[in-house]
Length: 450
Image (cartoon, rainbow, N blue to C red; front, side):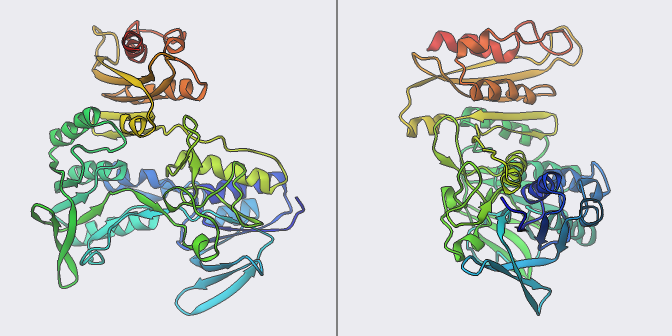
């Protein structure tokens, strides 16, 4: 690829990973990054821990500032520059700066890395003050400012996904009376209900009041500020509402430019991160991907995926040939002392795919039972009947539980069977594991089922 001009829309994980890769490969390349907020290259995943008071300097969440990219990497990063439309025919973008100023910039290659936004249904008073979604560092700082100035006493979290649960814990840490509304029977919809039940109990144990199988219907407000969350069963008075119902891809630029969309409205890309439109690429939380176990398109918004896709896009924009192979859906979270992890496919997904499967669930200890600090861990594992092909796992337990999911994620990526997992030469010492690691104990039980 010739050393033409690359314009990147979005200055966080995928966008800046791509920009940094291009700069390493092509020191003289003309790179322009347009970011609508004031920040670049930050950890959105760390915001609940900042809001929960675990550290008090939000700048610790920033890996590299716009100034660093400009001065040390010679990347033209322009913050508070919002791209309005993309014009593929003339290969240019229109940019809004502030309220009135609008300019245009040409591109030879364009990377859309616009991320995601919090999901919220179109319901009454959703724009009232005191209602927040978290997807950018700027949105987290708005929550922080609200809590510092308004001193809320109560909060309702709507949605029991990763952000919802982490924010519930953060608000409890800050002394608020916290309720959580979830439309399904248990929180954490990426787990099967039997494992989600353990997470629901962990929330109750830290003082969160759960309202399960209730649908958000409206917000009530007074003088422009939220005063209550209205569900299908009740009205919950509140000073603060947090949207934790998952995210949607920020794909509006692609939609207006007639770029093809894929799973859940995310931008469709091939393995090299190319879109359906010539000279336009996409990566990160705005882009779809492929599930490695099914080969089907999926949309999973995680920082790990965004960074990897950004590197792939940057490699290809630099003239290389990199491919993003897809995902197996690995994720971890934590609610106070309880760690949660999952990878692969859930039972409901397997039923929809008409795959004949079996499951096994075991309870064990994270360390040798006699060793100080040993605590409970529950492992659920799923495999295809007869063939023994590993299909997924879910883990809930205390410290040392969650990262065990990486064993299963590696096995899934390698296409291993349950017997292969049992035969792995995993490490052992009493401070770290029983002689049989809980993951392998679950695999041994599952072999008997299949």
